Image 1 (cartoon, rainbow, N blue to C red):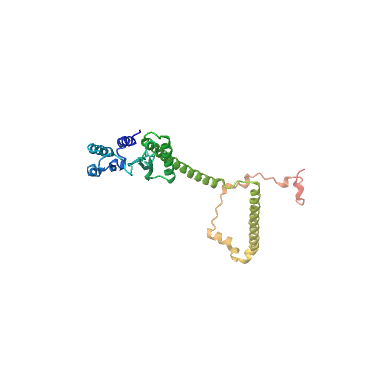
Image 2: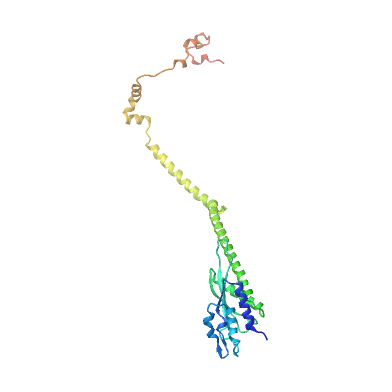
Length: 288
């Protein structure tokens, strides 16, 4: 016959050694009743003692009595805190698992729950509970708490990796959206025959309107423009403007004589030497 109590006590002792900083007993074996006697007398001496130590002292107490040990209605329970490895930005996720031995554990699965958690989504908590159920089913008949905790540890590490991946995907998505928005600024609307003809019709109408306006302005400007005669008739100062200009210059008009040749140096033909020259006939000096 399987001694479930012995297997459970041995596993508790092993778990305390494996997880010294995260293992906590919630209800130890020392809270059990033994036949007609109760170990309540021992509780003051067991304060602060571990589960395994409490059980050893309880056994020593019972050696001198004929009492038969019987598990109480509240079986032993304990918690183990599991923390993931640190992520890229030192972020971690954590959960505290609470286990309670069933009467026939390990032939029956232990009771378990998420006692507390940090940085986990509701979906993560649900996934962890499903994982515990699957692992417990696969390991019936064997002490399994270490296996369950190890599976949860690996799951928490996966969650941290998923957080990293999710952040990278969000960053890439934002960069992609920004790139698409920038492309829209440069590319605009794709040109098709329909929208080009629509644009050209509007452009031609606007251009025609501009030409009409310009022609009207030029026509109006032509009507208001005065001829030279009208300018002199309306502004008598123009009659003496050239004289005034010369007076302002002091009649000092300089001429560069070097630009002109002496009359004697010019080879001029004398029309009178031409026998065909007829002063009365201007075309007589033309040669055939």
